[in-house]
Amino acid sequence: MHSAIAHRLFTFILVLVLGVVSTTALADFSGYWKGTWSSSNVPASGRVEATVTQNGSSISGSLSVFDDPNCSIPVINVPLTGTVIGNTASFNAQSTDPCTAGEAIRLVFTNGTISGDTLTGSYENQYYDFGWVYWDHGIFNLNRVCCTINASSGSGGSILPSGAITLAPGENQGFSISPDPGYAVADVIVNNVSQGPVSTYTFTNVQSNGTITATFKQDCCTITAIAGEGGSIIPSGTVSVTYGTNQTFTIVPDSGYIIEDVIVDNVSQGALRSYLFTNTVTNHTITATFTKRVALPFLPIILED
Image 1 (cartoon, rainbow, N blue to C red):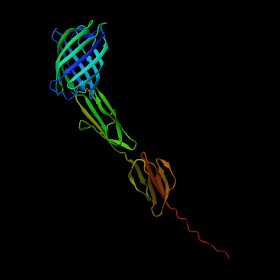
Image 2: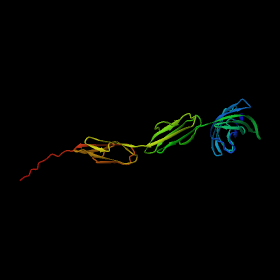
Image 3: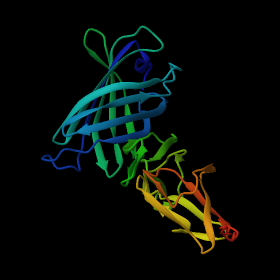
């Protein structure tokens, strides 16, 4: 490619003739494409990158061209739009030249053949000088680089971002896993491998497709119920309670004992025979203490005459 690539205003028109695709089918151009151009006119070559989104016959995305020997500043992420008709796709992109105040240029990519994720063909470089003027020609080789991460979550929480996340090769992508109230993270599975109940996960230096799935479980609150000597509390021990529900505890003294106190979360509630936790959303403790019943001394009754 000639320095005209780096002139002030340029237009890329890519006409990709796909010899292996049926004329009645729309060629699939979606994805991230990365490859090289090589001039047949002058000893020059460089890199080409394109991100393409396709919706039926409509195409949008961005185009980048690197390594023009006459302009050290690459053209980065030029917006492109275009259409696919049968086996032919046309892309148009415009930008202001980063190096000089030059004329519009045009690149025509022809004889492109797509095979799986490989696209090869030839290009012709033209610039506008009271009409399109031939300047250079060469070949191009592009590979579709798959960098899509599909993120999903089960009921009871969410993962952000979610859905199909498209990345360029080498990029990083973080995810945040958040349970709903009453739930906890059960597991995070990345590319079919368990990562445990983590709250975040980051893909680094992405070079291929990936998946991440978050699962959740109901988060049971626990109430620890303890009874001291001289009685019991029912139920006792570590009691699991479903988030947002109620739980009643009954305090029963042994024979010869009375209830001394019921302490809930380190706060005295008095000598209660029962206690109700309502709308349980956190862990709690309840402790019952007892004391021996004091027998009153027998006092004889003396009758006076």
